[in-house]
Length: 230
Length: 230
Image (tube, rainbow over all chains, first blue to last red; front, side):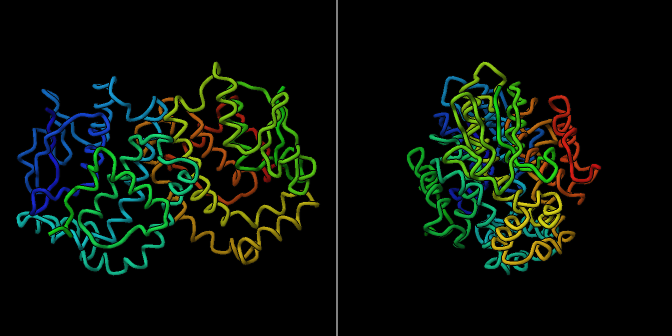
């Protein structure tokens, strides 16, 4: 069976990396069972040589790091299983969706949930997370998140292209979910798992789409542990 | 030969619609010669029945309006010519790129060039353009554009996903331009043709990409009339 290192919180069942979730959905899309190995930020030495971040996939002798490289690996290695990209053009533009999620969506979410993350973390990760993220932000986690209510409108506006596509199709992939859907759904698993802050409101087509994504693969996303669960 | 109605200025050779340019590039990509029929905003009655906007493509007995519908028509009607989408997945995600261009890129450009447009327009279009756009904006064209220097940084930031893709590939389509490239290049033909305001600076990978796009198809974009030409 395939294995992957998957970012975990104090509760080893709490998995909240937006990149690891892209890989979880991609593996499920391909129908490939996976054993997930809980991993903490400060356990870099536990990863295979050359790897510093998760997800890392172990596929027999192959070690593949980085969610995009993993999706590419899965598509090439398991061509007879359902396609993640539906062709060369789909893979090229999934790269654009990945870049859009990483440069536009993730940073916007970051500023609305970053101070909620420490209460999910394993004790050994607390200092690392706060020091590295506060250096990146140039302020405390709490300051970064203080105006999140004002950021909501901007965040919802930047999802306009998704909303536009959903006017005519159920998925970014068209009639069926593709890796582009997993990129965005994986990204939204991050706030779902670590924060009670409401990013999407009922009535937003993006909210309805995310609900469909949570139900995929026997409810893989919906059944995942969140910080608000007892 | 195919024909298309194409938005023109006072100078009938000045063609500046971001949607018509998407279609021009798509036709060139397919290697299909086209006769472009200059059309002004106030000539709705000249269009075929049921059509109110350009581009409108006349392909034998077929009348197709809307740049997305035209791209879809060309791909289905001329499958043996170079593909615009490189597969079903590519077409699905080109829809996302189209939606992104329409909801994010176009509105940002609009606020930086809208007051430059009237001096390009045919006399009969001047009132229509000003009245309809000022109603949409809730202010004068000049007021809408007054802070454009401050808007530049935001505009350049929203192109971050393009820049990220260009770190590893020459085109949004990967190794070759696809309709996704034409969507963005067509969108950028609009400010190029009507305004002297500099949106992209040398050294920006997006600027280098646009330069490559201008050179495609024997310099179709680069040789196009602009308002700054005598």
